[in-house]
Length: 412
Image (cartoon, rainbow, N blue to C red):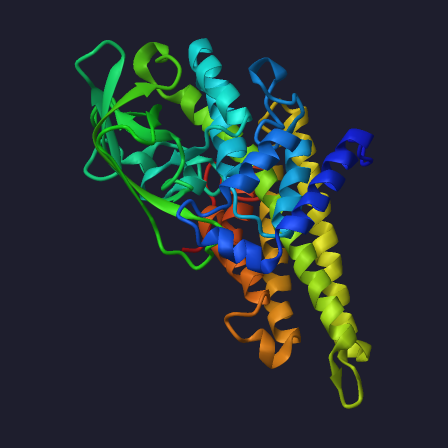
């Protein structure tokens, strides 16, 4: 691994940081999060047209830039720095890689150029709030999370037309599920005896799709509830021989590795920005006739946070490099470990930022709470941290040298 970034990578970081610095202050972020979409559509179009942000990691043959996970991680670090509400993570880190890996050539040609241009946004709908499990980040992807052929989850059955499927069920806590133009829906097909998990393509405005934005603690990360009432859908890709879902599970895990690396970088950017704001505050806030930043206890506390953020940044960069070097899968456990470390760093920085801002920091309306809410909700979305670490350890230790093979002793 070359730890130095190329000139092109540094240019991506610098250009994006300058643009977001001008357009994404705390008030602008709150205003964008309060829109029906949950983000600023005009800013999203500008990021897509000027910086090709959603197509950064897509091949040039499908309208993308042709970069990789490292460049996407650098972009996510900058969007995380300002807590940018945008469809970048679900579109570029989840939906686009799955379409590229599983889709037929016709599906790729139809969907990927629109995703790369920012004209179409995507969301991955997984039932039961089991996104982390579906992406093989906190537990093995065995398919039970999609309903297992029993009541609940999302069920798929063949429709009347050739290649047509019908979906019925519900998925909650779907990233940008309330506004995305394209839904990739993970559903069980084949009944209980021959059940397998497949991924289906559904247009957001298809008949039978009912969507609503959910109330969440972190308004900068919009979530939606998606109900599917006998919705006509198309299978993403082609059915495997034997009707199994091994390839789907494998590609979901690959997408999970890339999403973990991107989210880790985003969390590092948020933690670094929160720490910078806190350092700036303690330099000016006076107590007992001197800035509180001059007290040794405060200095030691901030130094510990700085080390934690830098360690998380190194882990996030390595995870992004490993995902690209391994063709999308990453070194076993590396993305999950990097995500755990980044989420833990963000949680620590956000919590201490509130305390070091004193009485004003404890008011719900203070900017420090934006970072605290992001830290809390991201861990609920793809965590918790102890499960990320436990599953990463099990993945990297298939022989069970440090425990029982095939099992993770994880507290409930």
